Amino acid sequence: MKSRMVRIAGLAAGMVVASMLGACAKGPGFVNAAPQTLLVCDFKALENNSRREGPAIVAQAYDSTSVIPLGAVVVADPVLFKLFIAQTIGSEVTGGSTVKVSARFANCGAYPLVFQARTHFLKGSGAPAEAASNWTTVHLPPGLTAVYEEASFSRSDVVSGFYIEVARL
Image (tube, rainbow, N blue to C red):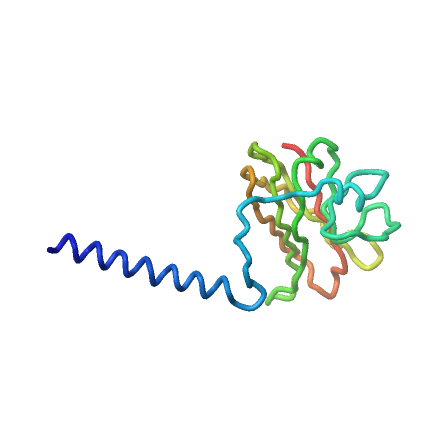
């Protein structure tokens, strides 16, 4: 009898969870939407929107003529450049009035990636606002994402741009 009640309770709990998930899936913007199960990367679009004189990963196309684009991830190694995509790149002012940057990287391959990243915070003139940050090791599992974050020592009224450098270990 007790075993049967446990099974019925388990079945009821499963139905409640399934109905909650169904309600979530039918919310605004999710009508008939299936959850994303596979990370799909379009390297052709990345290549078409990248600088021709060297590899740089950007979150969107840009029309910059600067040698190193601001707000971008710059990759010096052409092999490493084709192994991951920067899904998002952004910055925000912290509570202490410094600048925090972050980049979410997606590994589109079947093997784990390990690389280094560091950030250059720049003044409005393009000169460094401070020394480049220390290299940070980023571990990027296959088919998944990882976030790199760095904060400046300089105040946000001094920092007007940044770029993130990525290199092999």
